[in-house]
Image 1 (cartoon, rainbow, N blue to C red):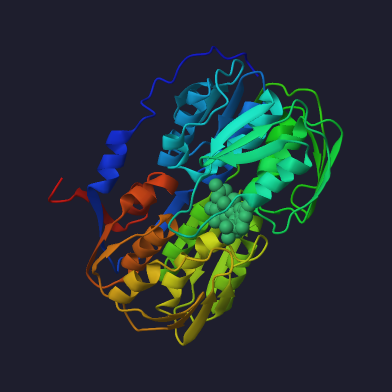
Image 2 (cartoon, rainbow, N blue to C red):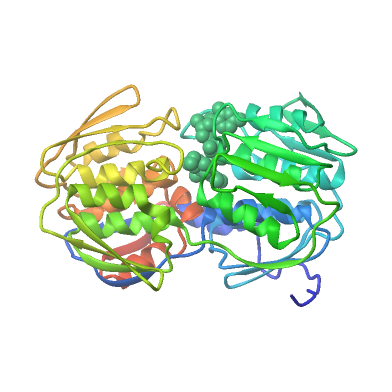
Length: 444
Ligand code: UD1
């Protein structure tokens, strides 16, 4: 790749005005309009965030392409800038120059707003020998501890302790190790994979997460010269190298955004085509959509078409680590099941508190009963538009999907969650024919 000039970001990464705008606006959706046409899926949020952290491993500039335009990307940009990374952003490209890091302390006020920023601990420690990253804390969907990350870093030879809410990690040279993860945590797999790229000797991660974003991170690190094999299986082997070099890398399409648009097509019984997707990454989701009555047709050109056969039935789903049904699409699939013929059971096993959308769907007329982590849904003939509030990113998206099929107008608050993870959400839906507007609230 071309050597990049190190320039500071020309855009305001702070984006407090954008956050204030998200908090002081609502989405108004008038349901009942079938969708039609094509929608282009953006790069994966969860890949982009961890690849940005991964760039810290490299002592030369890197370029990431197909980066989605999201509040979370802005947040990660601020954190990297606070560590001394020079960042230039244009449309969907990020140029990151981590040559001269000026700090190894991630600031609390930034990390607390973006849990994924904790993943910076692995690359910082591996490259700089020291990292101080505040505990990310819980969030709306669960406690989200990090002990699997910490235990793995210790096994790589780091001295790690937690003081005043900050994880301190030190290692003059990480050493390869055989590490068994108690749970195939996506974040812990990514933290340890990144740390091991610069460790001395070989690391084997057993019971590793197999998510496509883990594969994307491995491919990104390999494009910088890392030696990694087995990503996408339960066993990943990393042979440490002394340093990594510049790269130019294209981020994988967002399977969760793609799944969201599949649900939007399904719930409105429409015929739409998703462009720029990897259909294999959605196998568990498309299998369930077929089972309940939809036709899914991948094409050779990274396309995926969904068509309705008229009605859809209920089913059972259980969220699981990949390749199981993704927790990030549980709320969206539940929105679809509220209008199915018959009953359904949805079991959330990945996060302990991820049913915040249920009371809001019930406000729209859904028939859902919850016991613990299990929701039983009895399909109803119609939903009714209502004022509702999103409690987290995917819960808010699920309410928007439900609103597309509801009678009348739904007004959705909580857009600060939605804007964390969906690029041009309402524009993409409007281009498909949905009646959707973002409007300022009266107070604003
Ligand atoms: C990532 C995704 C998130 C997705 C999740 C599961 C990013 C930025 N976010 O989150 O969108 O919903 O994967 O697919 O990539 N756990 C522990 N101890 C640990 C680590 C995790 O108990 O040290 C638990 C978590 O609390 C959770 C479960 O393991 O209950 C799964 O978490 P994990 O796979 O780590 O998810 P994240 O990487 O945080």
